[in-house]
Length: 617
Image 1: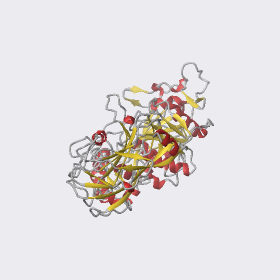
Image 2: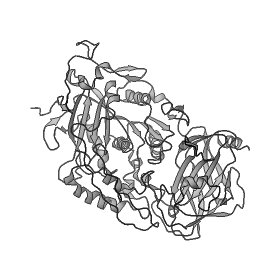
Image 3: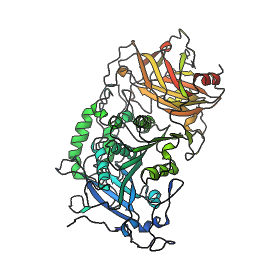
């Protein structure tokens, strides 16, 4: 006897979802509803539009792991929303799947939740405060996200809570293996390969008889990380992913070239803070999870003392796990996302392209979040989930929203970085504590200049100042033509520190600084980067600096694609502690820069000749 259940419509929030064997108005009872396509996009189908006829139900999918130590394989809580024709007419449809650790609520932002950043580099600080999450949300609803967009277009929308959150079992690991295997299990269930159950500990099974076995994933931030995590397992049936501002490496999120660095807007956050923030699962399992994951694995691996890259971080870097990946990739990010920085998307896009996967990237000029236009997402899912040959794989590889355009109106380019961009090396001339020059010609004997660290001055204050002992600033002549930067700038700094450890921060800015109320971030900040001089030779091993000894420190700034307007100047600012991002040691550390051995490499569309013309050379 088949114990599998076909879940019927259920009572949700006082509304009875009734199956109607007839299609929506305008279609007869003998005409079956099917997806409709026009110009390579799935269209809204009248028969799929009425939310009162959608079928909603939840279930638990069994995984291959037990991370909460109860001796039972963890089950993930899953919610399904589908057109009623999948029940009444036997219609099978592809799935848009979203998974998240946030659906059941997060911890309150209490004092002490974040790490104290006011201490000397390399020293420990007092323990932070641990908090508990009060779980919210009721069955069967996990989330309403994406439903209104995709169900009327002929998709089934599936949500799941990630391990140790909401009604999903297990422990959150913030990038651990189970956070890749959990969505894989859900996809395996959607493809009929593993079991789903009607209850978290019951034995009545349920099948996804309405699924075509074609799945696409999307989501923003952590919810955008999970599609990539699932794709790295190589799971069959995951045809396409659209990660939006995904965190693709927790090291790159919480560290920068060996430096302990916070994500923008969350000073003092680290991976164990995020663990506490999302841990909304079963209260009875939290003590075990905390002891095993947060207080052992994370405590022993995260290393806030040196900031070095180690096995703990390597396991949480999805670039290291991409070999099995087969899913088509449409990546989306903001060039001015200083939370999950734009390098996160570019590094994965670059690797996926090298692997020969179908790839496309969408960048805008704003901050965190921002999905591609619906048209782009629709074409991507139509092609890879419905199998409609719409030629999306032949579309432009890169779509970039220009500075003054609407986010829905990107400009098409052959690729990112712009293939017409080439590196131009710029050199420094003396000028500190005032302002020196940034020019293509290398002049000899520019000497050395010194800055004094003081985190109390913000980067913006330092960039605007015509004179400061707390930064070194070098600017180009006023541009006579627009300059288009596309790619990843690189800085090489030859420096000496007065102490064995120091922060190193670099901003690339557009001057004069626009202080008007209507100023946007692209008016002022071009890109940024940070590094630990102790890691000048290796990310995996830092060594104390010998005070007064010069070291060469080379690292990439964040990738960018920006047009600097004529009349502006491009400024390179070198300073030590960044008030918004780094630890805050006591003021007074001196960094001395050898100008003759320091340079900036800038990817300019049109290369050296174009930049020279813009500089009036």
